[in-house]
Image (cartoon, rainbow, N blue to C red; front, side, top):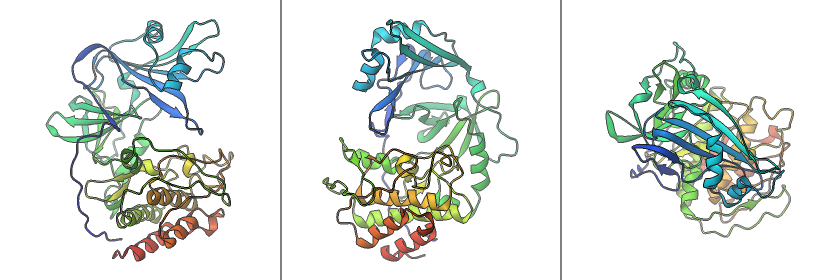
Length: 419
């Protein structure tokens, strides 16, 4: 799968709709300007989390006491601080936050995960768990062939607006080059992923299609604290499209056979460019399948527009517990939803990705699953051959879907790309 040259993208500073700048310097208290949210299938937040730092410097790893304060929608007390914050999509009010912090034990150099809830009697209840920073990680296996960097060599400059453990960093030896730092936490140690990525890096064609970590980040105890990746300013396809429209609309997709809602917003990216991007995505998935890697989590968020103008896949470690319901195939049931992925499931997600790519859609709803129903997709003036290709990918019966390689070949034949 040879790839013709593209025009590289101009380098840019991190976009504010995606990255929040980190102000360097010691502070007795820092509260993130806006919380992160987890959205339900109705598009409304059901959980928020606030990033708090006490007596520390946010631009340095492990400085101060880090608190991740979480709050969920309260079904027992409707008129409460957490519901107010979720409805307004903002932080908890200062009075509630002060009460919650007064109930949390914290120590410099430690991380605390806390959850607060308003009880029926109005009392703020807080549960928390302390974690030594260097105990968050696990020791990096000796057989992993990947360069390492000490966590103390990183200067953190930006934090992802939605994922607080994804940051932009510079090395203390090179302040002009951005890197992406994906930080470990107690739920995600990265050890299996690092072993997996390291085993593939030197495989022929891998870097043509995939984004790999460049370094493993370790602390003073030689425990894995995260990975560094090259920074690409355009970001994921999801954030790229979202940046074009300040108020994207949710689209309700009915079951196949129903009438999908019309798409009315103007298309902003030329079809020729999108056809090339589609071929990049299909080629990358075909490469994974040719090496017996069946991913299970292809989505707009895991497709990156790189600085050389190409689309590549990121976070392609096959983890059965990670998948997006918006891209899930109909054969996924409650019994098998966490089973290893299959080529057909990946191709279904590819079909949904091709549709969203062509129609520049970022937010949609499907019938809640599992099982998941094949959706009816709205189209505008997309070429009919592409519509039929995407529809073939999301066929209800897995055995009737094309292979990723077949999808790629169809795309390059129509886009007049040479192999």
